[in-house]
Each structure stands twice: as structure tokens, then as C-alpha cells.
Amino acid sequence: MQREFQVYKGLQRPLVYRGFKGKFIYWGVGALLAGLVLGAVTMALVNMWLGLIVLIAAVGGGLVFIAAKQKQGLHPKARAQGIFIHQPNFKRLHHYARKTNI
Figure (cartoon, rainbow, N blue to C red):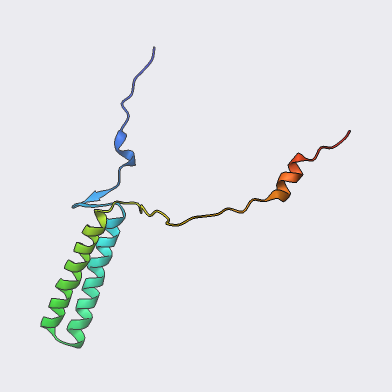
């Protein structure tokens, strides 16, 4: 008697958190941390209000940039432009054609 089991098909899907998928989650966390550090340094060195503006601009700009990059997909789709010439190796070709006498 054969048993049938249901297979969970979502194992190969990327992790999704609040609209960000896969590697872009880490990019988003990095943008948040970088904005916080940049804003805190600006608050400490220059002015509290300027630091707040820098913090909001850095975090918002980083998240907008990441959302725009995410629309291009999880994996790069670069195609090489140009003509590629592969040089043949005739020394190996001769080696395989050689016969030995027994």
C-alpha cells in the first residue's frame, strides 16, 4: 500500500518582510543603521535639528533606493556586450589523436 504525502512547495521562495525580499532585507537594515549612525554623529557634532533632517533623509533615501533596486529583481541580469574570441589549443588535440602500438 502506497502512502501519499503533501509536499510544501514554498521552500525555494525568498524571505519576505514588509515588502522587501531576500537580500534586500539586509540592505534595508544596513540603510537604517547607517542613517541612525550618520544622524547621531551629525546631532552630536553640528545641531540636533540638522541631525534629525540628515537621519530622515538618509533612512528615507536608502529605503527608496533599495525599493527601486528590488524592482530589477533578486539576481543580476547583466549581459556582456562585445565579441569574445576563444583561442583553440591544438597541442591537446594532437595528444588525443596519438595511437600507441602494443
